[in-house]
Length: 285
Length: 239
Image (cartoon, rainbow over the protein chains, first blue to last red):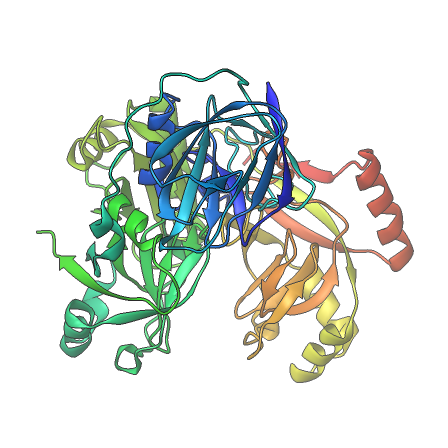
């Protein structure tokens, strides 16, 4: 086993795995990596199990001092990672030696990066998952002074070729969506706006993405509290679309207008406040 | 049991099947949902990962690589539902009714504080489900005289253990959270204990009664809860 010290925690850095299943009946959200695709890629590059815990890094990255050597991989957003000042490009694997510092610089594209480590991070497992989410785990994010433990301290494995990042994953404006249970409550004009409109992200965090209010979408419909799931898009009375993400609550009283699948959530998770998207709305028969 | 289900099925995303009953809040529908859920879980259908419910909907989370939602619907129809075997429990939750908001709410409703406390604590509530936050109970039965619109501006940090009223609902915030309900007291109990199985002591279908205690008793109970020695009062019924 090895460890590293968190010297600076970054904007919002947490340990995430594939999610916490079986506890929604107690109001416990699923959690897990916001961009599950790139979290799995970080593990794949290291020949880890796909659901090994990774570090999810948001926008401004942490500063990590490694006490032991191991292999790391960085995927997802290009947040200018470096080891002792040498740039580690996104989708690459590096050996990191005891005493070296892994830090981050200016974001180049994307919002969330994943730092995988050989064997995965060892962290408190609660209800079958290491995904950090308070109050299930002690804290939701890393803080200065934290020590992270990882499973293997080891010598260099064979270094694999760099995987070319798919820039369209980050740049495309389109998010594929299907209609939600309450889509029929929209007027024809409202439905048209959802299909064709441009929506600007006003706020985002692990619980959800909120878009700017579209007054044309304002309404008075409410539903009795019903199940929602990551990817469910709710519409508030004032006309604000809210996309529930991985830490989102499991029940809700706002109409469920649209639904994102995994791919839609992964792509949205790489966008930031101020960016605009459009829905590619597929209506299922 | 009946051949035609009382529910309709539809998908919520690629891995959730919703069984929906007519949109009402009634103890009868809750019992039907709980019975069906218990039967489905016991049937251990391969690919069915977890289930949870709200007032009139049962959500089934499944692995779409193992079975389709059509297959899951058929398998659900094939199970024969028996009446719930789980005994209901009535839990007695100590609460210290107090605070400015309680007095303001009482005035707003044309009641004295003592009357509000009496009405609130003499009701037996039905636990419908957990949602919103880990351990947040959705309780039914709040007396109409205490119904109150949520506050126009929510508070950033409602303390853990706060007993509150919002709309036609009452409940306890299990952890600190933003909230727009009217806070009428505190309970010293822990409503979500992550390292225990189950993490919540009450199950949907159970009953909840709030027992008024004074500030001193509140502190004593809080101490016992902290030490792990507090014995939660409960009645188990056979019905």
